[in-house]
Structure formats: C-alpha cells, structure tokens
Length: 138
Image (cartoon, rainbow, N blue to C red):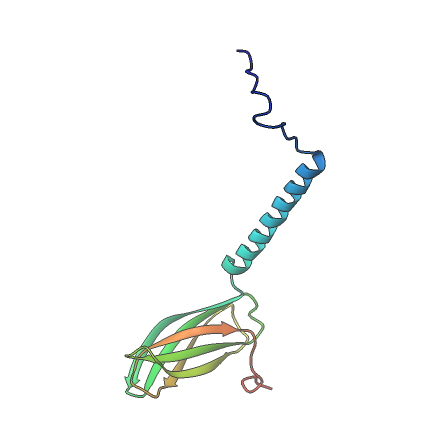
C-alpha cells in the first residue's frame, strides 16, 4: 500500500527528536524513577523497630496492664516504647514510656499504666531507639 501524502501547509513540518533530547528525557525519567523507588522503600520498607500489642487487661477504673512484643533489627541497642491508655470517649487517658533493654531481637514486655479516666483499652503508640537520658540505665 502506498503512503498517502499529507496536504501541504496544513500540518506543519515533522518534528524530529534530537539525540541529546532523547538522552535528556531518558535521564530525567530514570532519575524520577529512582526517587520514587527510594521514597517507597523508606515509607513502605521494613522498619528497624516495631511493636505490637499482644494483650491488655483492665485492672480497675484507674489502670490497665498492657503486654506487647517488640521486634528490632539491632537487639544490642536499648529502645523505648510509648504505651497509652484510652478512655471510652477515645481520649488518651494515660501514657508511659517503657525502656526495652538490650537483649533478644524479639522481646515481650508487660507494664501497668495508670490513667486519669476509666480505661477501655491499652495500646502501643510506637517505639524508637532514641532512649531519653532519664530512662537509660548507667
């Protein structure tokens, strides 16, 4: 089949992409892809320290016992976990920082948390390797 000629002057001249433009576009696309991969890894990759609540027990109208499990990639470093109690209306009724001493990569801890309102649950808010000086042992 023969190629049809386009009407002259109607569509303008064909554009050609120069070699340097092609390499520039390819480089920019590769750079954007690397940035997206890095941000995705930082946000969705494995965390160095994680904790999950395994159980809680309401002791009375002013305290709750929380048991939680901490898994960390550097077990020789101490960590701190923030545990909190929540009341029926969803407010935070109590908070406590718990020192997790160096040890195994997976550690189970239990703590009693006092609250300002009757608690309905106890939960792990989060953990970190940034242990405050007042929690560290000499």
